Each structure stands twice: as structure tokens, then as C-alpha cells.
Image (tube, rainbow over all chains, first blue to last red; front, side, top):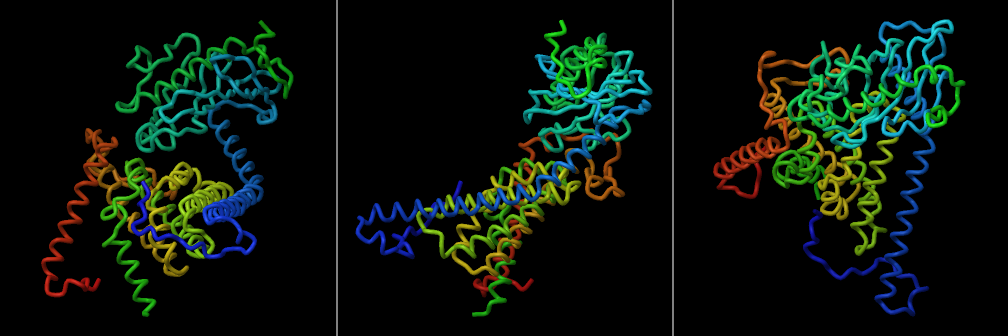
Length: 239
Length: 225
């Protein structure tokens, strides 16, 4: 959609190095253009690389702090006394349940709840990253959206910070839902969860993703608590 | 040459006569995507002001070394690089603001108005004039976005300033028509943006036509602001 240049005057490349004097004009102009583009690419890529290097650590710290806040929010009213961020295992091979990291909340040594990462691959704007917790009775503590690209003002109500309903945000419906017995679909698809008209895709994606992951975590709860800290947990080997 | 006169001309062009949203009708894709509410719209607008000021500054400063044949790829490169740098800097140093603006900043690369001003103005004018042009065009977009966002939010949802608590935690949104306002979904959806923008453009043209009729004796001069 760029405007075509109105008066395309044959340009005189401002500087014409004597080095290229013997070449034909077309070749000369091509070489000057190629070199110019190369120089600008190099300069601005360096600028980006430099900025990336300078900001990387701060971005990581900020992201970690945000993650801890998020994890804490998924455990409403549950008391735990272990260092939750460190008590983590990495799940592999959960297949379509897409469980990522699992943090184990314990009180003394008794299991309290599992906080798990998962994602919905099929949001309206692509992937929706989620964090949720599951208590010892197999019920969801609370669900939070860690990252999403749903349409601002439309599908982004899945994130309680953007939800217009502050008293009872959409995502709070999942709290206390039983992983095994709940119909993990939106009402339009015959399930138990409300959604906002005009933005069903976001709600449907989140609902199904939470359901799949919660069922999987519920099924493997004991093994997940027993796995050594920092380990990679491979479900296929256990079964 | 009166330098300040040209700067004033730039500001008037950006804010009204060649307003990017109403007269040049450039940058429609972010305008339509983001204007579902006022806070988002103004946030994107302010981020665009920053990018336009920086890109016009960089391009006018470097214009002597940008060969004519490759100017468009170089402009795009510069704009994309500056947007990336701004995105990273916001993420690192203003993280809470980044969580609000973050998804909008990369969108600015797709905003044609940035490239249009690079090509039409910054490539031909000095550093100061180009920077002022970028800022003026940016703010021209901000007020149109603010109005469009406010109207869509008001008609679509019956609220104003929803999401303001993400930026100023002690402020809350206003429910203008009360809680039982049924909403007008069409206005919140993309077609609504076209309708409202069309009304704004019509109003803009009407005001201009009236002014032109009034100022007929002296067509060259614009009314003093």
C-alpha cells in the first residue's frame, strides 16, 4: 500500500566510487544498491542485536516476577510452605493435553495442589498460554491466562484483567470445577461454560485446553508429586 | 524561509488538513483493529507517535546516504528495526506499561502512515521539520483514534475508559448507559469501525466544505487557528 512515486526521476547515485568506474552503468547501479542495502541491514541488525543484549536480563526478570504472581493467583485460599517456583518438573509426552511445567505446592510434606502450564493452540489469535491449579480432590483452584493474542476488546475477556465483568470475570467459572466429571465445553457446544456472543472461539479454546490438561494432571497426580524436583516427567514410561 | 512557519504548517497538516485518519486514510488496519475502546486506541496512537517521530528523525538524518532505488526497503528496514528496539526497551524498562501496549507496538510496523511519511516527507526534508511532521501526524492519528475508540466503545458497550485501570490503577471505567445497556455488537466488530470512521470522514469533509465556502475570497490562506 505504499504510494507509487509520482515523479520517478532517473536517479544519480550520489556517490560513485572510482573503483566501479570501468563497469557498465547497470552493473554499477546494482552494486551500489546491493552494497547500500547490505550496509543498512548490517547497521540496523546490529542496533537490534545490541538492544536485545542490553534488555535481555531485565526482560527475563520481569517475566519471572510476573509468572510467580500468576502462579500465586491460581492458588486462592490454599496454604503452602515450599518454594513453589523451585519445586518444578517438566512434563513430556502428555500428547494433546499439552501440559508443560508442573509446580508442586506442598504444606509440610503433604501435597496441596499442582499448578500446571498448558496452552490452547486454537485461539482466535493463535496460541493462548494458560496456568491453572488442581487441588487434591481433583478440582480446579483457578485458571489464569499467561499470554494471548485475542482481539482487544472482543476475545480478550478470557484474561480477567481485560474482562469487563470485574466481580465475576469469565475465567472464574472454572474455579471448583471437577476435572473428571465436568463437561469441558462451552454451552453452545453442549458443555457447562458460559461464553460471550461474538467471541466464542477464544472461550471454546480455553475451555477445552483447561479440560484436557486438568484431566491428564488429575490422572497422573500421584506420579507428578512423587517425581524428583527438576526432573523431566515422561508419562509414556510410567504407563 | 521562515522555519517556524513551516513547522506550524506541518502541525496544521498533521492535526487537520492532511490528517492521516480522515484525509489521507492511511493506516486503516491498526485503526480498525484497535479502536474497539478508547484506552486501547489512545495507547496505540501514542506508541505510533513515538515510532513516527523516531523513524522520521532517523530517515531524514540518513536520507543523504539512502540511494533512491533502494529507499523503500531501507525505510521499511529502519522502521521495523526502530519498532523492535522500542518493543524491547518497553518490555525491559516499563514492564507494566508494556503489558498493556505490548501487543500494539509490533502492529505499528504495518501502519502505512509511517512509511508514507518517511517517503513523502522525511526523505525530502531536514531533521527538525521531519521530526515535527512525524509527531504532528502521530497526534493527528491519536485524536481520530480517541474519537473513534470512544464512539465505538460508547455505542458498542455503553462504557468509556474501560481498561484505564491497567494504566492508572486508581481509575475505573465509566458505565454511561447503566448496566442493562444491551450493547450493539456490530459497532464493536470490525464493520462497525468502517461505519463510524465513515461518519467521521463525512463530518470532516462537511467542516472543510463549510470553511472553504466561507473563505472563498482568499482560497490560499487557511483560517488562523
